[in-house]
Image 1: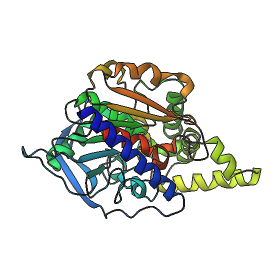
Image 2: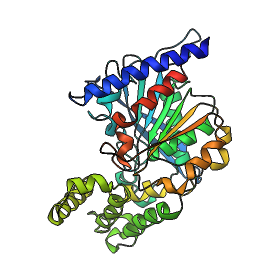
Image 3: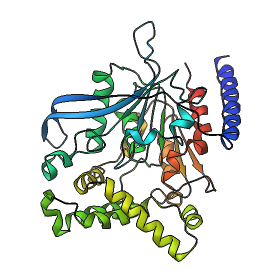
Image 4: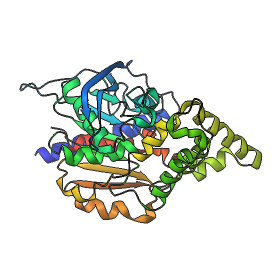
Length: 365
């Protein structure tokens, strides 16, 4: 009976989402609540390398209010994790929050308590560019997840998560959450990621980015006073990593248009990125490898990638192989279309939102 009820809920929610998606094609995104911002400071934070920081600050944003059950456990918290060089504010856009967090939407902030942290080295959290430069501890994804866990449990008093989801690096963090805290969440949704050691072209591109920065004499061991020219070289690689050939051909159908698009992209990135922060962010993936631990994931997990993702190309067959190790895992590959955006499809819930609706319905208590 319970299974039949869940199926009915899933069908109804999916129908509502599809109707909303059709309506959204002709209307603006739905308004969502203004987030509340804060900082959680951890004293004498120990990194996996043995390095320590007297204070590690994690900045965060929340939408909605935590709801506790009769036992005092929070049941409506949703943790959303950002990508490399990004921050939690990246999700507060009409494209993302305007299709997820508003009234009647899949993660309606009136119903859910949404947590958007800035990872170590990112956004307004502690990062190399603030003071220590290349003397900042060399953090890893495990360090980042441990800090996120302490923010959630110690800083926000949340002992259970309805959902953990993330985009790109945040998707990789989602896999790590799944096996390091297997009893803490009801569901997991990694987007634009793979649960294996970063190798092949992915690793090569990351190495190019790091070498472009470290190999520039203007980097000066991290103690530069102006951004080194190597940052622009690193941005060139980043733009290739996140490229979407179909969309870029549409946006730049001529030689001059392509040159202008490139120049604008480089300007945008170099005006907002810091070389040390970027170097550390890409270096943090060096020992990522969930593959030996996938059998420890207990919560239902839905991995979603897009066929035009240059970072996680489907022809490698990685997720088809690895998802079989996850006890309650499922993998969805979204075909290339006018709506996909390459690696950036992870931030377009109008494309993949119906799968989120299905996951939430399937894991409803």
